[in-house]
Length: 101
Image 1 (cartoon, rainbow, N blue to C red):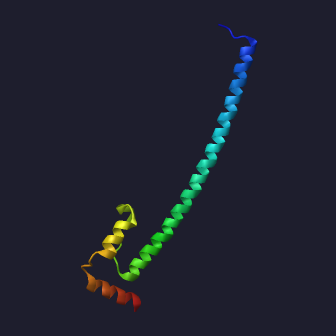
Image 2 (cartoon, rainbow, N blue to C red):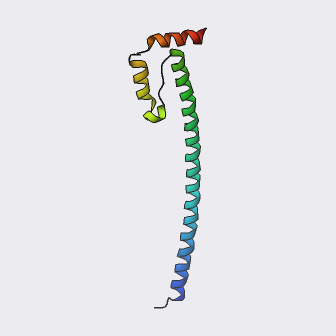
Image 3 (spheres, one colour):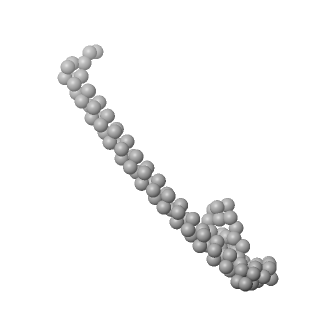
């Protein structure tokens, strides 16, 4: 079944409009991906800063810090390090004295 000139023109116009919409969507997707990359970079920098703060405070307190990435977060390490009993309290005191002196 052959298309009439009007049908052919209609389908060509439909194709052009669809192609323009695809290009617009591609542009929007790229913008959103870039926003997500920028947000991720900010979050990673924030995480690094807070990790340094956390580890520095733990060092000053003489608390052993576990690898936070292996635990999946700081919550468990905080519970174990600050809430639990330290078996080596004597050793921790010596480390504090050495750090201060």
